[in-house]
Amino acid sequence: MAMLTTEQSSRMIDRLAPLIGIQGEVDGCMVELVEVLDEGPRGLPGVALMSMGSQRSIQANQYGNPLCRHSEVRTLSLLSEVERDLHPVLRQLLPENVVEELRALLAD
Image 1 (cartoon, rainbow, N blue to C red):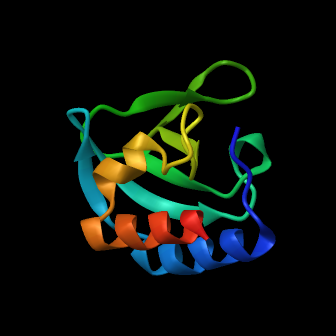
Image 2 (cartoon, one colour):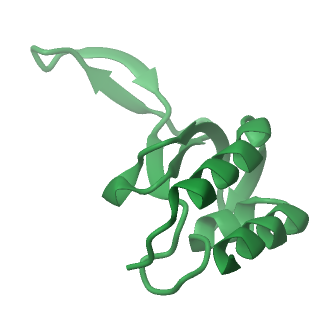
């Protein structure tokens, strides 16, 4: 598993923060970048992606009664679990120039 230095983490987070709100299709599902996390899955920086569209699940209250519909939010680490590169979902979602900048930060 690849680890990031504090400087790499900070620079990657700073580069991604202005992209909050970017939308795109990943594996046939429309998603939106809703948050950049200092500490996401596995203790590494990450992002929160929200599913878009009409397929919303029903959220239950503490008694199990249906309360409202909400979009699913998933958190991802910035890095792939199998290689020292960006997570494949981010490689597909982010603009190519941003992917190249982030890869350059990983190479430092």
